[in-house]
Length: 201
Image (tube, rainbow, N blue to C red; front, side, top):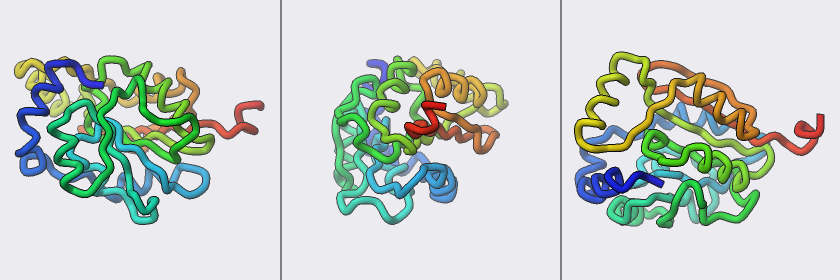
């Protein structure tokens, strides 16, 4: 899921990660998940690390809650400590059955994925028709985004940041119906898996 240098970094900082990083925005996630057709109960938090995005998800999920999928064992330990299901895995080879989830969230993590097209292909397989993937990312064309990109390179990360319209286009290339919901230093793109009737039109 993450490049080797990125995984090593997150294993190292896992004990302090939730202290250093602000929580995810629950209102943004709720608005984005509302794009899905039908109820959203089964959610995977891909690249979810310590579960900070999972902690911000709205009520109404399955009793087991969201499942965090991440490559960092140290971060997954933190997610388990917070009470979330945690599975070590690769976003380009998700340990999930086809059409098994209503939604996936990727919050502040996509830029660490070495195979973004592979991850999107896997998500289009794993998410049911009408379900959504919600991607929350940093815009490299924003002044703060440029600073962040330089900083991550300086500490040895293999980060690749996408601008909002490029991310939307990549999701559409994979077959999602994609929309940019908001813009700024952080932005949100939602991709919906077309329902079968929509795909046949």
